[in-house]
Amino acid sequence: MFKRSSLLLYFNHSIFCAILASIPMIIYVREAKFSETWLLFLGDGLFLFSLFISLIFLSKKVADNASTGYMLMAGHAVTVMSVIIICIIAFIALLIYVPGLLHVGTTYKTLKQVPANMVEDKTHGLLFILFVNAVIGTFSAGSFTSIITAYTIKREQRGDKAEI
Image (cartoon, rainbow, N blue to C red; front, side, top):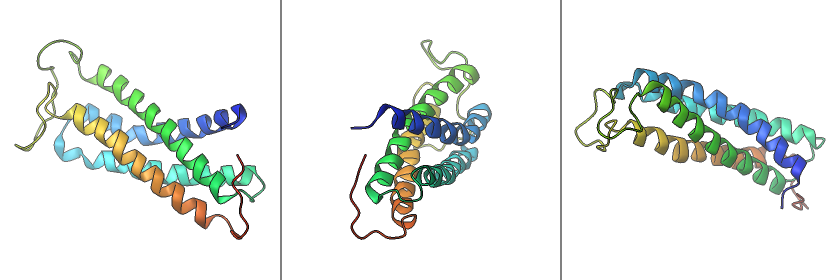
């Protein structure tokens, strides 16, 4: 379905987007306070804007004449690859900043200032918040950006055929 060269190009763009989106997440893991959850949403916003810039560069790559279908598929491919990379970065950040994560029992560092209805796990919800945001929040931001960008970046959409 995808050519090997295009997958490598998508992977390069997804690394850029994932690293930029992971910076606030790493700060959140280091602080581990529930009141700092806004950092995760800041990461989603950074991902949204970095994906928008990446899709503009991908459109320029095909001489500003990329079809809408191509842009939709490219945006979602970059989004899925970025979500996987962000999950890997989140796991590595948890291993570094939360000692005892893979051991039995409660870890040494848990999420502070947690509301009473939070998911109870060995980190008091830190794992749950990180991975739910990484998967649902980032994918939602990426999907939104892919759809909006695919239809706004194309000047003439009549007679468009999807070619991958």
